[in-house]
Length: 308
Image (cartoon, rainbow, N blue to C red; front, side, top):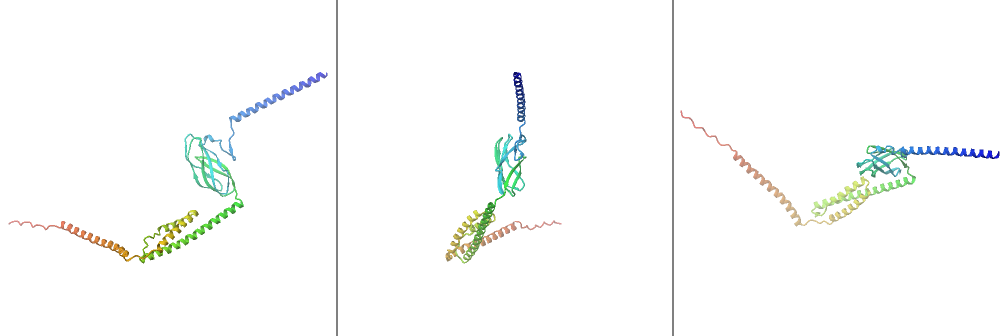
């Protein structure tokens, strides 16, 4: 009796093991089927919540990504990496970027992008507000969407920006003051130059054209807030002013011989002009008389009277 119970228990255990084995085999087969299905239909690749490659076969170019993808409020540079999917090379490839609070300054295109080649389109612009911004990017008639993060400026960043701007404005004000002084000096120097010239001083070596050109350049530099070139031109203008002022101050009166020589040149020019005028007048007069003589009509001859 005891052996019968033992045999029954063993039979039940064997049956239970067989059921478990069959169930495991079915699960394995189902799992293999699912894996095969996923291989036949690959899942789309998403970036930042947007389908990026699901239609890649129909796109002439692919957007690989933007580097970096996190920015601070203010001026930024977007490095947009793309790939050419067509067998023909792409030329002058640009990206038109738009988004809330974003504006574009400039675009540096890819000159040439061969098949399957990758390169960067450089776009500079400005973010005016923080947050997760969705950018719309149009490249070669394809439209892509890319999320970027824009961080608000910290208190330290704002204070530093204000400090730099204040220093810049102070420097521009100082340069403007130096330019005003230079213009006053130039005006006085020009007045001294013409006074001495009118009083027969030899100022032939003085030339104020270069100094005037420097002053105009400084004006342009300050209007464009070009501090570096403004400083350089102010230094050059000061050197030129000192050089020309020394020439004006050291000029001396012309000698009698020099003045006579200058006057002789003037008188010779005037006399030459007068002689030329009279010579031309005489020539025209003679030519006119000659023409009149040639076209003077002859007297009509009287016809002989007929005899009656």
